[in-house]
Image 1 (spheres, rainbow, N blue to C red):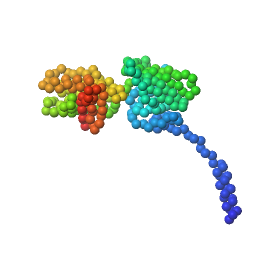
Image 2: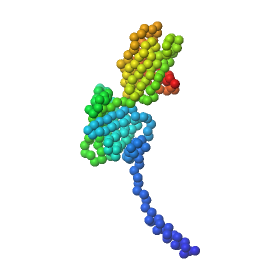
Image 3: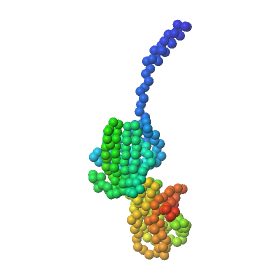
Image 4: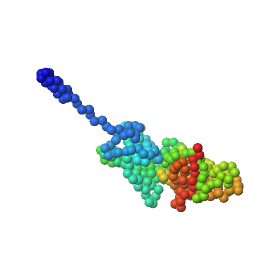
Amino acid sequence: MKKQFIIALTALYFLCINCKPKSAEKEVSGVDSLSTVKDTAVSIKKTGGIFFKATGTEPFWGIEISDDSIRFTTPETEKNFTLAYGKPNKAMDANVISYEAKSDSIHLKFTIQHGACSDGMSNNQYAYKVKASLKRGSDKDFKLLEGCGNYVVDQKLQGTWVLEELEGKTIDAKDFEKELPNVEINTSEAKFTGFAGCNRMGGKLFYEKEILRFSDIFTTEMMCPNYDKEKLLVKALQSTTRYEIKDNKLYLFNPEGTKAIFRKKE
């Protein structure tokens, strides 16, 4: 019995010394569908959708900004990466926002400036100019990149919204013969149409993160008994600077307070 125990113990010893630990595998970030390697300095928990997209040429590149991370892409997918970024810096004297993201091996800096921009490769027109500086690994200098971009309108704004309250007063359906005033927002085209209470209306959306403006508003030219309320609604839309969506309602604000409240149409 003792001899058998010694033989078993010896076999176990040789088995253990021949066991080699597996080499450590790189951790892959779940926020990047292209299996971006996560740097040691990066810790990302995806909490929000993409709100800005930019592209550039010579070479081709792309940037997508979400609430907590920046995703950089190129045709060479092995060079793609996703990094957390610090608090953006907004210039006081110009509509320019600066972002910076870095890790042990990557340093990305870029600015977003409001202004008409063309990518030079298509007929697409953009509302923002983007300038980026990128340094990887042992690079001594930053590589400069230029491109164009647009903010992505909040998808929660998509749909038809019916007016419930205007300048602090509840809307009475009896005041409108045809239908209640409403706006139908098309987020993909950054446009809106609707009924102002007397006339049809439409226009464009100017959107940045946490900023919403209704611009280039036009209406048809019919005269109605409640035309004064229509003018009040158009004025409220024109003066809107930000919004909130909660409990299926859209709240429009400016520095003076709440301008209008709409309910999402089912």
